[in-house]
Image (tube, rainbow over the protein chains, first blue to last red):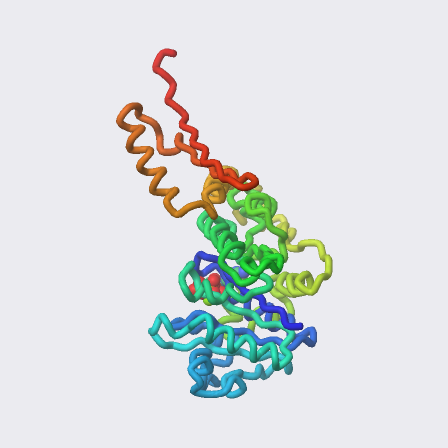
Length: 270
Length: 85
Ligand SMILES: Nc1ncnc2c1ncn2[C@@H]1O[C@H](COP(=O)(O)OP(=O)(O)OP(=O)(O)O)[C@@H](O)[C@H]1O
Ligand SMILES: [Mg+2]
């Protein structure tokens, strides 16, 4: 059984690609066969975050157009045996992705026996975002603790429940999860930032993970090594937990409180 | 809270954010799945009402209720308090 998971948000720049890359690595590290697809046509990014940008020969649109086989376009990860990346095309043609084309590629991945297909959605609610979610069984809705991100994610929830294959064929709809990222426990404690409880209450979603704001994320993208592979990072641990929850494990949320600091840091740290 | 933080005292705005979102999300969810003309209807309705009373855009609420077999469109308009009343 293949499960198709869309990583989506509405608002741009909230952490979809970071999340797609880390969750794909996390699932593959647990022995699952995973393909992660960049749906951001024209603004390819996932290849950089995954560190495979120099190995892109063919892309998603090439496969759809029959310029190459799916096998030729899938980039095998050098770190994890069971992980594959399908890069976005850099074309400016907005109609390069079609429902039929996307269906064809997903069907082939399913026939190839992949356990998980992760779809890294572009921002917005236009065609690219629509096609990234259309065939999904599950959705990871990435949210920052900030008003515009929360509002946009609610619009995405509306689309997930009305404009997807699962919502229209009576298959019980898309299973939705909330992934809160760039969380700053100190600012939450000071009342400057909405808490995970606040956002959960507003959106009424089950929380699959809370990822702290962390300098390790930039370091990871600089190096082309998804942050989940960094052994001493709280962001990595938070993503590992989210992967475990996706696989059905029940774990308490971590990193919701600021780490204890020394006396001087507390007096003068602000 | 550290000493410096005490002097800097930032307002706790998270509650304001939560309250605003609670309202806007409820409003947007209410109109969802309804006919596409609802936002336009709301705007035009507001214009008509404005000819008679000066109400706030927030004072006009539209609600779509689905019941077995039919839909009910519900309008509620909160009139401003009369001065001195
Ligand atoms: N937990 C985090 N801590 C700090 N920075 C983060 C975190 N998550 C993401 N970022 C930063 O936020 C920026 C946007 O991340 P990312 O590219 O993953 O977002 P996106 O939602 O895919 O954006 P787009 O909508 O453009 O596709 C990046 O600079 C990334 O390093
Ligand atoms: Mg992205």
